[in-house]
Amino acid sequence: MTSISSHVDVLTGSYTPDTGGEGVGLTALRLTPEDGGLSVVDTVAASGTSFLAAHPTLPVVYTTHESTPGAVSAFALREGAAPTPLGAPVTSGGANPCHLTVHPSGGFLLTANYGTDTLPGTVAVHRLDADGRLSDLTDVVEHKGSGPVTGRQEGSHAHQVLVDPAGRCVLATDLGADTVFAYQLDIITGKLKPVAASRLRPGSGPRHLAFTPGGDLVISADELSSTVTCHHYAAETGTLHELSRVPATAVADIPNEPGGIVTSACGRYVWVTNRGADTVAAFRITGTTLEPLGEVPSGGNRPRGLTAVPGHLLVANQHSGTVAVLRVREDGTLGETGVVVGVGSVVCGLTV
Image (cartoon, rainbow, N blue to C red; front, side, top):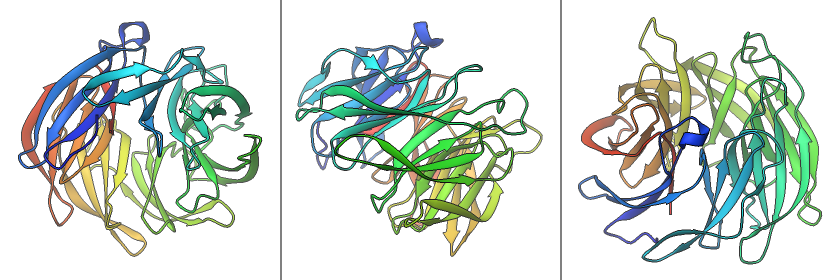
């Protein structure tokens, strides 16, 4: 499943009947960038695959299995074949794993476990074997904290884990605690050392972060306040400082929760899905401010994940079970293509 000039291969993840959805798990899609055409290539049964991550050097992808208790799996990619399990699923180190990433060293998988109403959010570390297989669980850190939003912030809820562009810190957003926790990973022992905890605006509910290429700016999609915030990021300390923020959508009088967020390769634009408004919004990054560039229909209902491919964005519309193709113009604005394919309860995508 490699990309060539004439097409781009994308793997999507979906909620399955055992996790409250109607999908099959993994679905392989193929996009032709020239005309924005999209088609289904294959499917693989896998439980509750709510997020995917690629190994930096090996033809291996990893997926969450969002349940209680949670699990994570590795899948091998082979040209002309569907992804195949690389060993059995293993514990995710918590409940309801919702995000994961592979450390740039290629030696560890990092997982964010959302938790439950009674179980706290955690970040877990698994060692990876030379062929990418999941090995031992080397660490689990438990988040502590809460926020003012009733029903969502009584406790901690880890929602994303990523490594900063400098490769110095592991950052974990916590929607329940309104905090971005920073750690240093010991690549010998696989242990996480806490180094900072950046408290964000109360009630904002930070869901996902996206860095600009330089690494000094990071943009957050704030699920509970329906905002998009630009922060300065200090790699030497692992801390964030708010610079500016804007509403995630111009659609008024409707509950809205931003979901996926992607920055452009040039660092001038950022795009965010709006669950509620059912749109994808575009913003220009000017200095330290965000300028709204408008928004377009997402091509379905409850848009969650957003995947950047050459000249386009793919939108995972969870409730309508559709993946829609949007055109990215040179000025960062978006255009509808009318291309939509059915993928049940789809929530995420990954170029492979």
